[in-house]
Length: 471
Image 1: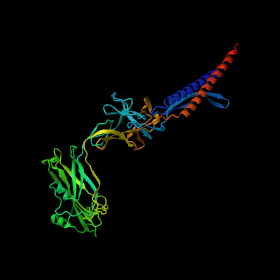
Image 2: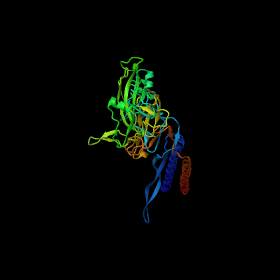
Image 3: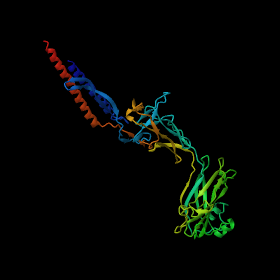
Image 4: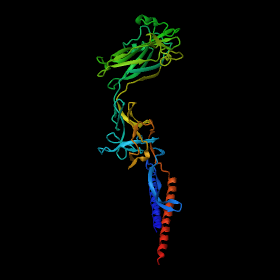
């Protein structure tokens, strides 16, 4: 009787195990469409609890099965494109780190579900209003090393005054030499005393734009020598003959300058360019100019016309040596077969105030703001967390996990560093549940449940036979 009764308990353990398996499979199937969900699977182990002494010694008889653990499978789910820039998926290992602001001592939680948005206060939050953790940037775009709630603070981009201007052009070697140089008396004089003209927009420290006219004038080398003492001779590179000289000037409306009279124009000498017989820029003798912008800080601006062959640097012996990378072609040149001098490229580093228009997140987790002045700036960086044993994390509901002693401490850092994966913006990670596998497991558990019920029925029938013996 004891053996038959034990058989019933053995069968009951099988029923419980099969029921547990069906529950896990049911949970997986129910979360097929849950973003970031990770499927679970049940691990069972046998129970050996009874010893039997026989003719050949002691034997063991199993007394059923019990659940050992339910393991989460952190395999990669498919990435589904949404187009929403704050929808984030992790391609590889790692978790997003989130925190509940309503709890003073809220435990850090970890999730693969990246359905994030910015709330009214600029915090990056989950659908459950948990704040995403990361590294915020200051107004200068530099990241802080402190892990905190991610918040967009730079809705306006501070202006930057122009300090460096680069011009690339090809000047016509057949232009006439202008005797006497550039004349800033009036508009007609400026046009008559120049061979080239272009406009560059510069910004002061308040972000105000200023249209500055740049004029190029071809000069007689002998005349320039007499005025400035510039010697047109062999430069640093032996065998190089310098043959053409151009001067450049900037003209700014005086009404935009401190102490300037409206209607007048202030001239700034940008320097002299010297070309060799091959049309390459041989020497670039430019001047930094100090522009006293009205009601703003004075602008110290340098103009760059390209790398000159004789750009030189001091050697250890204190001698001027040529910069080996200089070609005389990467910038301003003097080549023929053109009808007129032309500007190839112009750039400057200043800009006006910008208003935040769009947000994007790159693969390294950098949150980048795009402003209406055409510039962008880093606003922060999303942090990712890995664990030595992620399967030991404790489910906390809402697709969130908390650490356990078995999972190990969180290893926090930037995406694509260490073992952490990358961030995919505009996408979400789908559930990794494979329905075909789940249905097969469901059938297997169903059959196991039926078979264990048969075990109980059989043991019950045998016990009935025993009871019949006393009749």
